[in-house]
Image: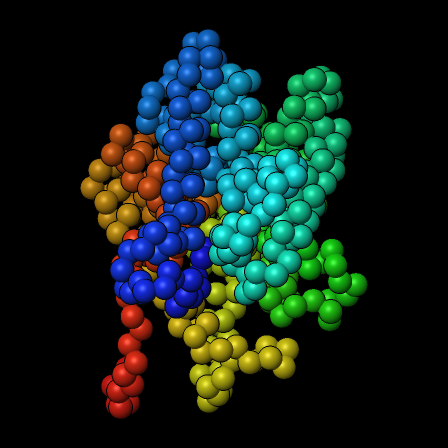
Length: 461
């Protein structure tokens, strides 16, 4: 849910200058979002630092608790200690709560509590919700929040039963239901946390159709974005959807299709060689789905070929849909950049989709977001190359996974140095809150320039 509404103006007290830090200017929506996520992480760190949050014989420290809380709130899934082996039931409950709150957003959860208590949602709260959900208008924002919560709970409940039907056979009734609930919430919120132990993720269920689809379907739904899910719920057919929903659905479908085909072609005679034909397709589909911020894996990531890992890097960089629990530049950004490139090749300046023209400012935002994320990944990879004893691919993979909120790793996460843990912690936080939100939160308010300079070309290419 990256906040990217540049130039949005908020009410200013009479007699106050817009450039000053007034009481309203100080607490902008971006700053409240930033502080809110930070406080949620701090609370999670405190709870996970309690002695009874750890299993007997397990161990934790401040950095481990901070890293785990950040990964849960930012719905990433990178872990320095195994979730099942290290954390007690209480610790796992804390992690599950952080995943749910971080996935929906703390503003959405706060509003839900106020609604349940019968309290009125004021204008300022509605403006904050508008910013956090990246909506164009404030009207109907409370109804949207209620629909988001209801639909998310229903999806998680359905797939809790689906997954429990398989886990009960392996772990018994009580444990099976808990496993179904935990993995359903983790999947829909694209968190990637699992309770199978031994850093195995879902590798014991490579060919299990129930577990694979029971995880993949809520992951895909969560990655579409809450606004798209609500739009699908309200409309009858594809043609009735908003342009945003059409772009997200089309781009998601194409990335899943081509991702599956590419991974299948690269790995069918390598890592997937020992599987049957249908299981190969299922495993390839799951590995194409999971880099788009899911974090689960039915095949050990470190066993994949270098060419496949390089392709997964591209998928992690793209991510999933806006207004979702996903990271990356988002599929809409990727679609705009691809269409802009194609139009330039054809000699056209305007970007049109479904008989609708995309404003040029959206292209500038897409370019800016792509360059910012690319720069952050470059800088962080450079820093980890200095602090960690790991090869370049593992370092780049870890960094991209953190910023993309993916959770996949080549085994580097548990081996990170204290400085490396802090670097990845900050990376996950930036990936979840969004570079635009952080930039606007830290920027000093000022006047917009009203001067328009004459144009002049420079040579590129």
